[in-house]
Amino acid sequence: MSDGKEAVTHVHHETEYQRKHPETFSRFLWRQKVILAVAFVGYVCAYLVRNNFKLMSNAMVEQYGWNKLNVATLLTCFGVTYGIGKFVMGALADRTSLRKLFGGALALSAILCIVMGFIHNFWVIVAVLLVVGLIQGALAPSSQAMIAKYFPNHTRGGAVAGWNVSQNVGSALLPLIIAGLGVVAPGNLALGFILPGVFVLVIAVFIWKFGGDGPQTEGFGTLREMYGEAGEPNVDESGDAGMSYWRLIGKYVFMNPGILVVGFINAALDFVRFGIEDWMPIYLSEDGGFTEHQYLTAVSVLEWVAIPGTLLFAWLVVKFDDRRCGSSVCARTGAPQGRCVRYEPDGRRPSVRRC
Image (cartoon, rainbow, N blue to C red; front, side, top):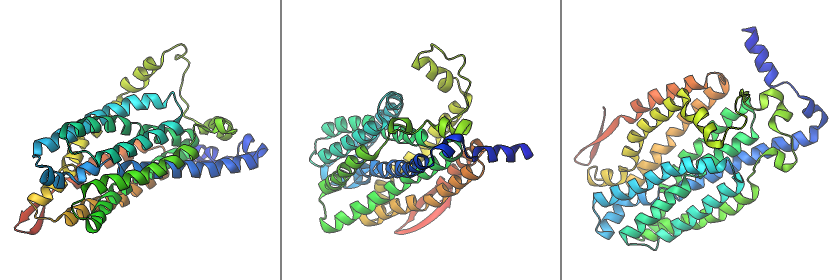
């Protein structure tokens, strides 16, 4: 037990860099807060120009004369290219400016969202969503990598866990915005794309300006220089000299059992997650008898109530920073139990049952 306490004390011990450059280190700590805010706000905005079609799918079916196969095709197009995009853009994030990739991808997503407000042709929307999925795939890797560049070992997990709340905030705000626009301009689907797109496009300018590529690019030391060995993961790289980028990916990603297991579980959970979230508007409208405002509010509530759980596991990550895998397993084990609840209409009255 004493070894563990000594290890924790060592992590927070003042380093030589901190003693010699107190003002520089103080500015770096402020810069950490700015980076976390940029990553958080930017990813909230990512959801403001990502789920617009999904939330308005029921209204688009009614106005454009589509059927559920059209909706399923569009959802699949986005999902497939989004998955591919996260891998491809994640590799790009390792080789390019994170600030420009994050800000640029967010701006392009906003522009395409605005464009979708003027498109009614099904196949043109298919093409746009394919591109949107690919571009949106850059946002999570670049924002997470930005946090990893600025936060040392003992605070990185907490920072990423806190950042994770941005997904819920963005997903909760968009349906409220669309519901509000429905009151101001009933039946005007274009506004649900255009106004969020314009807002996010403005925010993308600030992301481009205030994002970061790493402490050393701004005149600070590296994390290892500022925090000692606690600054960066201690990985044995003695056998990696001369290995290409993709061989390193193969060694540390595709040959890593832990990553493969987490990836498999995440994929399995996403079948449940997106199966519910993608079809909530149509299901609640047709089978639940919800009005547009009611089902948009339901989607928003689903995301708001998820935030306490996200914060709980963020606290567990910080509290037990050497047991992050255990926290992850607990979250993934409990998630299906929480999601395995379905709405069964009884006339216009809801009755909820556990699966």
